[in-house]
Length: 202
Image 1: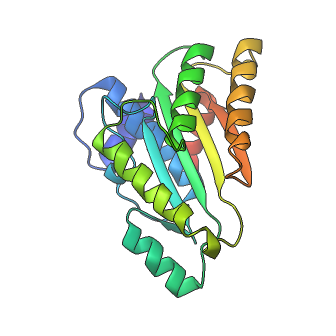
Image 2: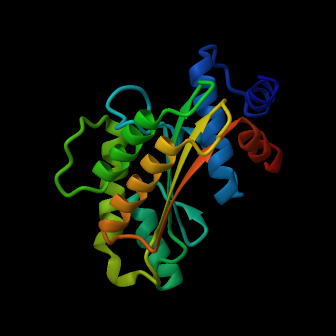
């Protein structure tokens, strides 16, 4: 909690809901591992309901956090292509352990996010991000390598390599690799000690 309190104070965030606090904290810490520039956290938080089991998301290309189609066009023009692309997805739970079923729900939401025929209900944020990602893939001729896809499932528990959780994690990675869209797919279970380390890194 002291880490979260410090984060809220440093970002001048006023939020009383503990689960929302943790969502913000987790998304900030995770994205900051891949992106060291300042960013508006509101560009990464998916909002409640219709979020496909995704709490936070970020798109990075050419060292820039991309939030609009215009930025994609600018990057292609400035850099003569798109490189070092990373799609980051975050799910966070204030729970003392890891749930294989919730990890599966999160993974299924990410797979559905990239589906040509999505099945899950989508809120406005998810739809906007999906449109942005679809636009990026429509520019695939300008790719200097396929994007990487990183999933982070964050809890306040301890990761102990539970067999069911590891199996579920591997199944999600397999399903995403099968889409043929990515250079690399990784699913990171982030426990309490790792999220504290992430925050210290920031």
